[in-house]
Length: 67
Image (tube, rainbow, N blue to C red; front, side):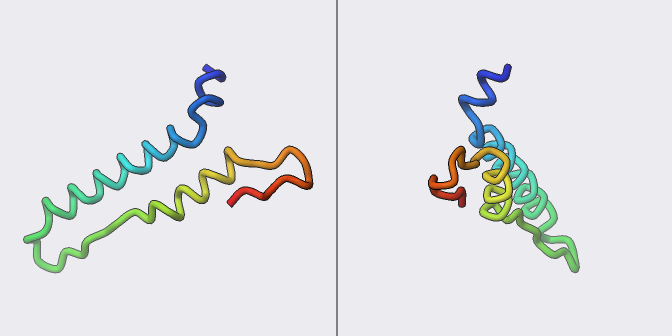
């Protein structure tokens, strides 16, 4: 299993975030006609940036820092 987590890395997490966003958007559509309903959204960029910190790290001080 470790081989797959290293091979796919952040892509697995990105797919999960996209799936979560689709669920939120589906709820927005389903409740669009509900009085006083406020649509929600998932900040994909912020969640991806947070996930990058887990997967991307430099191995040497002269390497570029992760975003």
